[in-house]
Structures are given as C-alpha cells and as structure tokens.
Image (cartoon, rainbow, N blue to C red; front, side):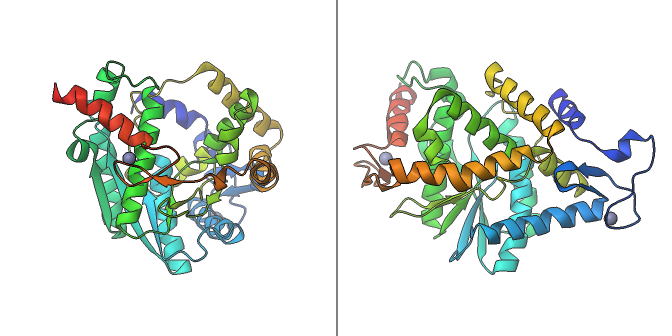
Length: 337
Ligand SMILES: [Zn+2]
Ligand SMILES: [Zn+2]
C-alpha cells in the first residue's frame, strides 16, 4: 500500500483497530467499527453503510438536488469520493426514479495513474450495471495532461496544470452531459474539499470563486447544471464507505497534486476544530451554502452573466472563444510540430 493511503488511514478512528476495549454499535449489539462524533454515533459495518446511504437520500431531498431530474451524469475519477458518489447515486436513482450515466475522462496522466483510475471506474460501472462513457482526451483532441505539463508553457499556457486540467474536465463533462441528454452533472467534492475552498477563498477575498460555490446550480441554455451531493460527507466517511464495502478504487494521488502549505494548514486547523467541536465543519459549510452564498449571489449575481456560444465549438462561454478552445489551439500548434 502506498504511503499516501497509510497516512490517510491514520485519520480514521477505526474503533476495531484500537483493540483496547470493545465499543458497541449505537444501533445494535455488534462491535462498532467507526465513531462519528458529529452524529454522536458508534456504528458497526452494516449500520454505518445504512447511515450513509439514508443520509445521502435525506440531504438530497432536503436540498432538492434531483427535483425534475430525468437523467444525471455522474463524474467518476475512480478515487474514493467519486466511487462513493456513484454507489450513492445508484441508490438515489432508484429511490427518486431517475436515470444515471457514468463519465470517466482518460486524461492521460502519469505512468499508470490514469490507467488505474479508468480500471477502478469501469469495475464500479459494471458492478452497478450503469451505462457509461470513457472519454479520451488524446483520442478526441490529440493531447494529454502529461503533454500540457511538458509543453504547456512553451505553448503559451500560463496557468498551473491543475487549473488547466479543471477547465478541461468541466468542458468535457458539459459536452458529454449534452450528448447523453443529462439534466444535471454530479461531482464528488467532499466536505473537506469544500471547507478548504471556502476558507482559502475568504482569506484571499476571491468573491467570484466564493459565489460560484453552491450545492446546486441551474441549467442555463447549453450550460448544464451542477450538483455536489457529497458536500456534507467528510473524506473519512467516503474512505470508510469504499473500504467497508470493498469497492475497487484508485488510492494513488495524482502526480501533479502539489500540497500547498497554506492549504495544508487550513486543513489541519479545521481538523483540530472538528476534534474539539464535533460537527463544526458541517456547520461552517451549512452556514456558507444556505446563508452567505445566497446573499452574495443576490448582490453580485454572476449567474445572470450573459452567456454566448464559442465561435469555434458552439459551447457556452462568456468571451468569444471558450477557455477550452484556447487550450486546444495552443496545444495543436505544439502537437503539429
Ligand atoms: Zn449495528
Ligand atoms: Zn470552444
């Protein structure tokens, strides 16, 4: 097992591993395997899985995430969060009565990172019998994320690889959602991702980024709406879910991921706060999503920005040429040489 996973395991209070004494499940007489302090529960394997699945349905209902949804496109990278998302979405699809379609993008990352991601995603799609699309960046556009990392600067792409990769993923998700007639795109951002994003955006005053962050955005013309149904689930919960259900997932960290020390500190501080005040992360994100974001949205109303169609590809954009086409053009010149 790689170091990254071993480290992540240390964050989990697997009661069974402590071995000092037996803690009983709060709902039955079995041995508890996890302590969820925010919910004041110790749960056995069966009751943990049941708790997560029920909570997903309840939160989706409360936040009206799948109202009027006929088909949802589920973006799956093959990591713990998106694999959990796919399995929970499959339950929600059954419960609410909508269809789902899986999407995995072959970004062409690293020696075997993308290969492992696709392998894990495929296994989960097949296990759940979910129709899916594997979209290859190389096959469609002739370049990979590795190419951007190697030649991007030379091609005039100034943004860091991760931010370019984010633009590419959003574009492809929207394109595939239009192709398969999906009403919503769901992604696996978890509570910890969102806490880090909110705190760092507030710190640096990036209002535009803050306003964009919401649990769900509506569809506007060809720009398909998004939903983040894992926003109230911590990474401890998604990791425990995939491990207890023995689901295949890629536990490697993307080779382009660079932990920024400031972000790491925010993570550490929010984890410390959670230790002393269980549930503080959920409270922070709930206040943000339900009160602060709507107030900012009303003031700045970025969502009413006029969208037009990209001159080159026809996809929605605020400028003349969309940011994906700019990347594609820059890379074409390099690849052609
Ligand atoms: Zn139990
Ligand atoms: Zn375009």
